[in-house]
Image (cartoon, rainbow over all chains, first blue to last red; front, side, top):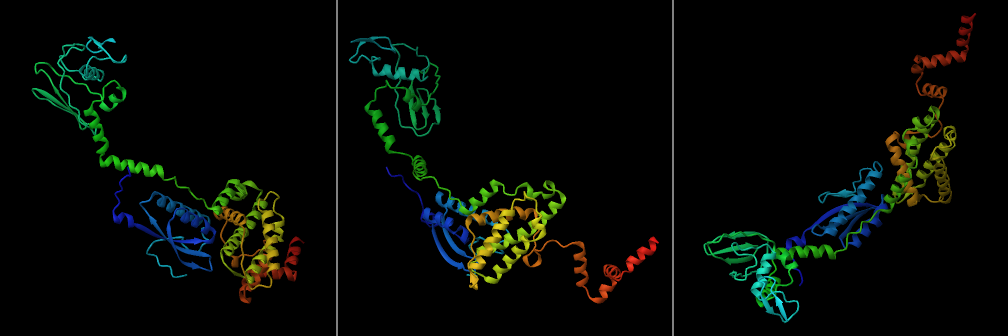
Length: 104
Length: 343
């Protein structure tokens, strides 16, 4: 018997949008996470001089895989920020949804 | 085939050799007895026992409740309801074992049509709660576990850390080397931090101008050829790496001399190495900007004095004791004074 699912429409559409700045060094790793887990994303700009990609990622927080992928991505970016402390200037790799980024 | 009932002890004719009870009543009573359901006042193996009327309903939970009545007791555990009629003069004491557990052990009870129907009903009417838990279980079982992806660059940096390049020598040079050597190492480390940061930053840019690369290479040249660098102890961990970097930069500059703008890239391995070293140096070496640091060997005391004097205007110079001292020395007056004193 096929198990019943009790997802409301709201739950289905509840996607959390996060904005990231992905440096060239990590681009392939981040893309592997996004493609490997079918996570919706959109490249919204590039900072050509610094080789940074500005990325919007739409996470379905009801999905365990999506949550883990988010943790994975943010873990990588945090580690990178720690090692590159002082070298990235004012660049913040993880932005809030409301943050405006007009440099690209 | 003649057999004896295990409950009442009566002889009966059995069709199967494995048949143990003479009647269904005896089987049911034997079942109750095995499971600790003893009706009060009934002798344990009495054949004349009045068999209570028991009706079984499907159950969901394991809650147990007992309603006492003058004529019958209603025993509930879960949705399973047992009505036990008995003689009201006799006392009642009940002990219960979960029916589900008992049924697992019990294989002898004949499956009557009624019980079959009940079982079918149980299978059909599954409570929502249990279906939801099953659904969740299936989801977690069917979904393969998330495969954690590690960054190649961060992996390399961590590997370098594990290899402990530099280690204690860099953290506490004064503990590890003699004072003079340690001083040289601090001087070299400060410059190394500055240049490593410069190289990492430049490698992040898509394009750099040739002049920047020229400045960096020139700084490396002055640094590597300095007396302090050449006097470094042999076990200084980064000496070879610094020379390698200098040679690499020189080669790149030669190759791309004709280009005004060029892409400057480091291999992942080299970048990880530089990031690791810079991260270690960051904690123990002061940060000085490239524009504010000189890469020639540390000046002697006399040179420092000379620099100080030349940097001041005439009035300041004359008032400075160092200037006067040097002037007197040049004129030979200081020597004369010294000679007269001794005379």
